[in-house]
Image 1 (cartoon, helix red, strand yellow):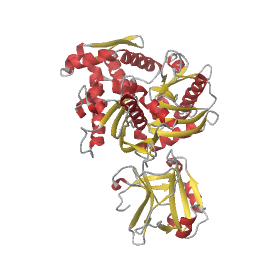
Image 2 (tube, rainbow, N blue to C red; image 1 turned 30 degrees about the horizontal axis):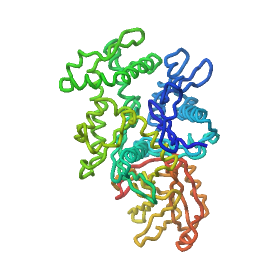
Image 3 (cartoon, one colour; image 1 turned 90 degrees about the vertical axis):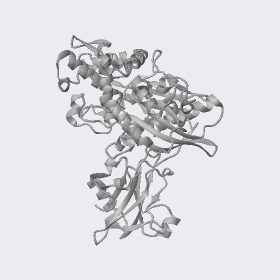
Image 4 (cartoon, rainbow, N blue to C red; image 1 turned 120 degrees about the horizontal axis):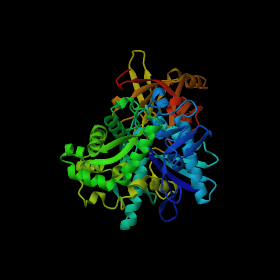
Length: 545
């Protein structure tokens, strides 16, 4: 058996293992270090092609190309827009993701001569942890991987910047032969999302442990666009260039085989000309209008020539990427007294793009030689391998991650006079032990009792401010399960989370002494994802409904 870490990216996916000395990439073939995150469905042969085999068939007859499917697990795109991208009742984003990850894991096992994965650590975007609209994507990804019981025994989902931070800690210690203490700010910009995480590095029971302290992110799908990062940027440039070359309005350029073929060629140019992009942008950064006269590349769309110039790259960056990056950096540093003493690590493929790097360096006033970045990333290629390598370190228990609650959960009561009383059992940012039961406590520190008729009044919070709490009501099936529980008129509600944030609701008869002696509840309901549990989201403040 083997333990592996996967950086499941929106554009590329990478697999790493820890070989006893260092994390190493498991190549998909002799020529590649990563898998293109692409699936092609061959309609004539009724089969799926994944990775490089899929990439070679993009734009072929009788095929459907699926890109960015990871970012569609958050269910933020309408059925109409999903259909425009080739999805239907059979080829759902979940089905395509499962086909792709099964291919990646099977290929890794064959390459390593193993028959099963003992522990799989797979990264998830930080923005999946921040709202009820996106948090279930993490559970969906977990369930897809856990469902591969023939290939995988244990699955753990860890945020992508936390994985990257683990690799930076390991990297630093290899470089300087001393433990790293203190805080690291990771900025992870990939194809679909922008994630930041401030983590504290500490030694716990003789092992280095990564404790996330502050997180932010962006990447929610908007309209028919995937995320707010590399993919959205590439598609925007492609539509702008095609529109200006052919006169077709951008909104009428279909997401079809011709557009996918154009995207494929454009992406290849971006990757192969990274140094030329940096040199040219640096030369014209203060006179962007002059970039109109500088050709980036010549491509074709439906047999017609299409030129992409540097001004189009610059314009789309300023419209789509720059404001998002500025907002997330502002959110990240809002509560920081000082960023001069932070260690800073830039990871993810999009952080290699000149304008992204320049904006981040300007924001933090990072010089070419800067103590804050020293030892974090020792080679440029490590920006793209950091997440997979960190996941491999976690999978093999070289480092550990502290379990921090990604949201608050509890219950509220409504009294006869109409007033409310809210109690959280688990609080956002709280350090928790997986599978331990936590109770809402009264003012004396005892579990808070409530009538059994009120146990359907749940409360969630996805932020630091209590005013952002939301009321959630059980779905009919879950409500029926609650009503059928064998409990008395007064109960105590407890909550636990496993190491993938899967929630279990525990219901105790109101007998505090017994509950403290015997932690087994009268009944418990395990929930796969929040969508299994709640509906009718109502925005409220804690002051009342």
